[in-house]
Length: 366
Ligand SMILES: NC(=O)c1ccc[n+]([C@@H]2O[C@H](COP(=O)([O-])OP(=O)(O)OC[C@H]3O[C@@H](n4cnc5c(N)ncnc54)[C@H](O)[C@@H]3O)[C@@H](O)[C@H]2O)c1
Image 1: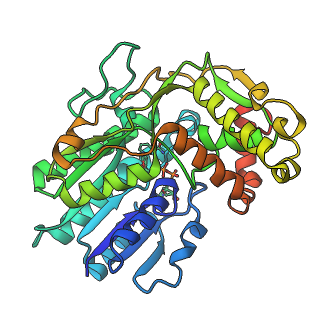
Image 2: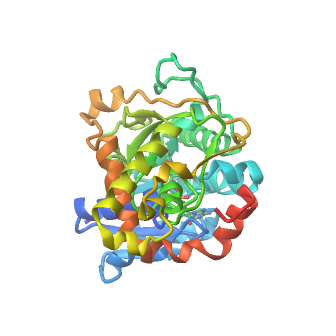
């Protein structure tokens, strides 16, 4: 039996990854360490509550003493490090928490692994999760980012992730820590906190609220379903080469305004096909003979908004044989269905602190 530490396992990708890992490795000891910030939700992992080989630790990755105790107690063979402050807009308002968690927290985790694994690093793996945003922004005709693209982070979020990537690389180089890194494009799917574009649009459309679109809506992102991301991570953790970086992308670029249109059309079709949904979501335009697209509202652009991200994932394919499988249309339709059926999950989030943040961000309670 092997033992794995997953940090940030109560967040969006972390949750999906914990559930994925449990399917792949039914006997592994899984320890989730999560501070349960606004983005973490303990109940995401309720399915594992009775699993005797699952442990949830409510704690901070910056807490070196806690980390030392966990490494001693569980003798981890694997660490998969998701925990981060992850929302660009929040980093623009205030970046301190980003530097603390993303840079100092990653450092504390690397130190804990280095100390604990010093005598026997063989067969272990520290996998650090990063983002394509560290590479900066592409022009319309530029080639996609590769693993050797020069880092050029543009937001405090991206800069803090770049700092954590450099620390992870340096621990591999200097101390021989068995590190791998993956830089991934925009994820979407179940359990994503509704401040991010896809769930924000779905929930606002269902509730008949404006769909805020930054600038001219022509910012392009490369979308990847979270299930594909989790499958790629598991492969890198098991088969990736020490010290290497792997880009993970869906190869499915789309301007934001088209993506919002796709989500609107999907919701319209669902509501028209099911009168019970029209009764449930009575403020949705589609429940009243109109189109969700009518809710699109252009808002002032995000400062320093990167124009285009695109990932070249050839290394992952050539070395490990992985390609994303879920098409954008299918993945978005599945995601719409998950949020339509997931009111018990998102309803509590739509109140309190999250509502206050959205009000501060957009001026009204979007
Ligand atoms: N979401 C994307 O599209 C995307 C794309 C590429 C890379 N990433 C990276 O993937 C990782 C996960 O992203 P996500 O979207 O799931 O984020 P998220 O914001 O949904 O979840 C982050 C999790 O980390 C926890 N956390 C925050 N600070 C912590 C701390 N100090 N100690 C312990 N736990 C803490 C939170 O409680 C939460 O559960 C991040 O490292 C992010 O940079 C995300």
